[in-house]
Length: 223
Image (tube, rainbow, N blue to C red; front, side, top):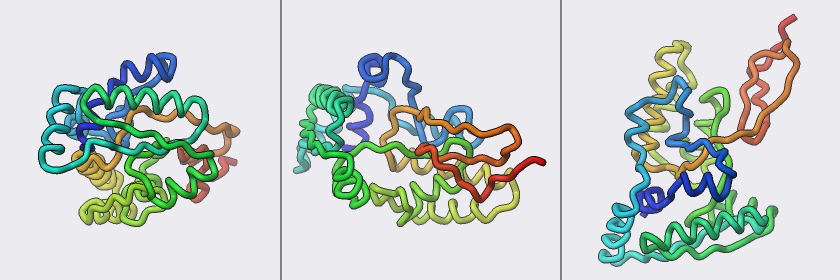
């Protein structure tokens, strides 16, 4: 069903109807221009294929599964519109999407942080570097691992990458993280983030989260 959900989303239609044509589609945690991205990881990501999605749903239902999915999101007007878009996309492949709306405070605490959802939206991922963002999102018990994803192999790769002082080895390890999490469908990506920070030229070593927060452990002044 996770694969069916991903294959059912036409991201060209999403960009046109939800983002004024300005959406940059995402095929994994790391962007296409990242050193941690690989062609192998991108190839592992399910492409838009409504026929295959419909087949997967039928197989799941035939095995006793339910094609009804609860989608939780905020009650902001743009998120209501987004839910309606998803509802139509899922209906085309045989999935009944039932939206439930919350105010932002409820959504943050009762849905996302508590992990009480089947499908829910979130902004996450690194902007400038793999650490610590990828560990927060993919490591078992990570602070942003809201879907409770857990893969011991990924945990080991993340720990090794965080401890490595060899840039080439660290890159290789994070590339493996990108590949495995794509194969596992750990998250359903659809767009890269656009949030940013402003700093004076002498401020160096900025690593940003998509929340606009800065990882200050790496920041220094060039004086």
